[in-house]
Image (cartoon, rainbow, N blue to C red):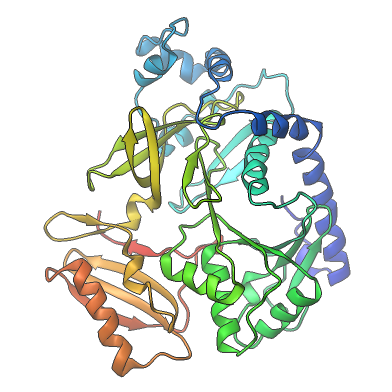
Length: 443
């Protein structure tokens, strides 16, 4: 959803009007009759079963793509085979760079469907612009709403939104630090204005709006929770649902959010490309939505229980992505042919590398009980050096907590690396407002 260039220079009431015009158009496109039909379909379907009919139709259509027609022929893919998954496995894994370089030859323009463009950069910084059909967009939002409805969230529930979009001009110095997107049922809070001096404005707006549902990046909601504690504001009892996306949920973030809002945050993994989707269930386990996307889990070189996630977006017939490398990693194991996801670990670059060659992930446990920190980031500038970047909380005591953090880090990183603490007033975010937990210069 893009806003006009003059949006930021307009008065607040004009900004709300412009935001709602875009909200109306987006809602109409996402949640029309096609969405309702797909939501009913997915609620009735089995997430553990691949929709073989849709997958086969998708592969047949993919032959209209110059890129895939050539690749099917090169690797002797037989679409008439009864074992269609075996045929897919003949194809090499597709990288994001390959997609960027061959985008014109991958896309199919002859699909009888409305086409929209999607722009995604992810955390790698490599921009990808691709097209999707209306049915793809409807199906993707249907899958996401199936997951929300399992927890009792209704489609008319107003959401307190903490995402990365810039919806309040950066030079605005007084409230309101939010905009109301009526058609999308979103009270959109600005991440760029949330700080110690404005947190009471955010908190009071949340209370007076009677918002029961928060959605956003884990880093932003954890930061909001930290500021509420720091300002001695009463923990909120009105929030019933907190859904998270776009970043990995770290253990210390989860504890902080739960302490302030009194509910367990709910995780979800999805990509704009639609090649994979993993939903948390009410019992806390994860479920792969195979009825939406075909996912493969390939052993990594990190450890026996860490796998690369490879996906096929068999609902987007206008831009087929087959065996696409998400560059994301998950921890889990196979039970017969089914894969059980234990945790979503993030990207390969979210791991640090020890001089021995060992790669370590899930290092958020260093800060598991560190409620005295606002934010933390791990930076690896060299193979034998780790820098822990820390933003102190109100209760941080250097004489006590420095030793605790170093001890926790040393237990996980061993004696091979030099570990330093670096204190910051704020950890820089990506252009989309995300917090990268690990930054490594090791190639």
